[in-house]
Length: 306
Image (tube, rainbow, N blue to C red):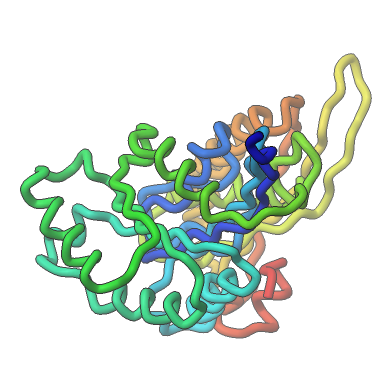
């Protein structure tokens, strides 16, 4: 008589350089948009928890900021957040953008440094070789071989996360690495992040998508008010502040006759309504908080989690 299948549950930290596809992978696994995604590097600033529950397993994915050579205070905090996600994880997904690696001709020095830090934890590691749709197979295989020689991965999964290619195999390998145990979260829970946090992320995503130069990296978003109001239909009234560091940035973010801030608000509201499945009235204000990215005090003042 075969033994009954025992339930598995655990935490999988997704780490890697900026813009390799970590948030895209987690959103694909969850089947919904939870983590914001833009073409710009360093979009993710905080650790985002995504909970995937199956009949035989629950995996709590930890999407993390991209690890980079940090110079400013904010960037150093982001890198610290990424590495701290390894504490308490049961396994690690180390993700690389294969198209960028092939351009370099070898594994980058930073990626090897990240692997060294991961190896110190003793955790099993899946190598997610992302964006394979952008490279030829004869270029892909030597790169995979070089990584296999550099590190004893528990599994290597080529994928194109944006299309879902390779994601089922990634999930299969992830479940295999989870320890036996009960669910950490109730069925149907998607994240332990608050509604307010998700709302601020949707606003910040649109700022990243619709502004240039230094503005996206000088912006933080905080909540002033979230209130459910009953009218003819349920309506969520949201008031949020977009913080910038300089007066010139405020003017650019507002745009001529308020055109840009209105468009940011409209697009943000659309994303909120999709996620919350509720009508949203969104009011945005732009405020100046001088050099908030340069100190822990400034970051806390605009609502950044430290």
